Image 1 (cartoon, rainbow, N blue to C red):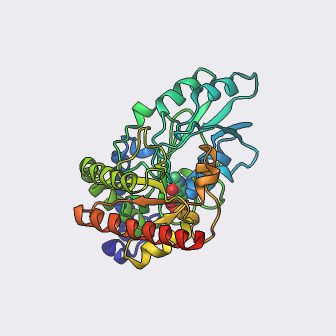
Image 2: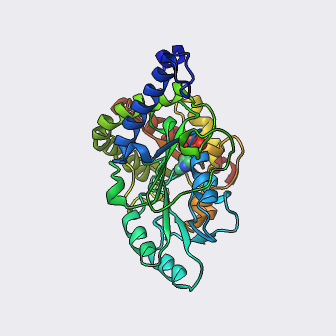
Length: 351
Ligand code: PLP
């Protein structure tokens, strides 16, 4: 990224400096596309996952849009009139409901289902979603922001028409993302200007951000192999929680999940209290969706899983490439201390 910041050329200029910047972009495009098995010329850089999702939902030009109830706000709010496909209590999209909803005779639809949920880590059956959608001539968009770098993604196996990625979820810089556009669709841009990025995302490219995205993609491709190790750490954390508080809910535990994510309740303790107490103990976790942390809103994801009542007591714990056994020991000790303090406070109140 530092080298890219020093490259002064505008990538649209034909002089040597411009050509150098252009080469940096095109090499990066190849690198990011490789992470998901996409053809480089189908990948358009955007300002992040939010913009890519907005373009997919608003630019696809489909009269009917169906979204899973657990999508990120950048999908849900891109079309407030979209029909919501329910999920089961395990957080997996209800394929029978999708099938029924698409059975209604109507205009061709766009279906949007994320690859892995950002709050629970639950992985969605995208190939099945695509099979159902294809049989009704519907297009499929998949927000893979959370899944990318944490599981293998093969665009051809998924079969989706639009795929969203974001650099900061794989260790790259914030403010750069991508939309992979399949051959069956030609979305309309949401911004007007020059012809950059196939005209779909006009504006002089963020060369340093793009270079950072590609660097992160290169590392992520090898780091995926480390996720089995993170899964074992995550499972140990969850076993300790269940051992301490058998009534704690671990969301999506029985469903396929990303290895690094755990969404758990501490019964009787507000999520914000947990977040602050754990932070004081040096453990950084989030209440609800981190993207919307700061504003304390109940999680629409947990509500969609039929757990609205418990949502206020749920935190999300994410492990990263640097997480080791000692971190889990520390997190378990801190969690138990907060739980014990809450228990004795409750006992004092009852007395
Ligand atoms: N989609 C999901 C699932 C997310 O978790 C996020 C947020 O981090 C986004 C989209 C938005 O991505 P960005 O922050 O790059 O705009």
